[in-house]
Image (cartoon, rainbow, N blue to C red):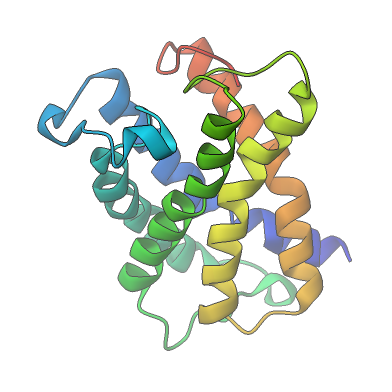
Length: 181
């Protein structure tokens, strides 16, 4: 079981790399011409074309890193990435991450939660959903590309919110993110 937990944790690497790189674009307002809401009334002003374009691109280095590190993992932790284009995997992971954030944003706009805000009522639920929505997206991509036991995907979904919140806290401390949530 420990090996499965470690593999699920390793699978977050491309998304963590992509998410951190994406925050450089946000914090420094790089590519401002793409900072246009996808559909502001539906998803809010924070879901922009910049995220749709940048997140897949900056997730590719994380997928390449995952691929190169999979060769040095002990045999029991080996990821079978043979025959998988790491570039296509990275693009797909980033796109899955972004697309699966949209339904949650849609629901939050419908119930009157402002973009980027965390409500006081149902706070823990919305914090969890803010982490889980994108995790479902990239877990689905992994399920398409990799043949792993179902428990690996379940563990990926369980542990990703904790990884995401930790990374967000670190980004907040280094002033790349305005909020630690």
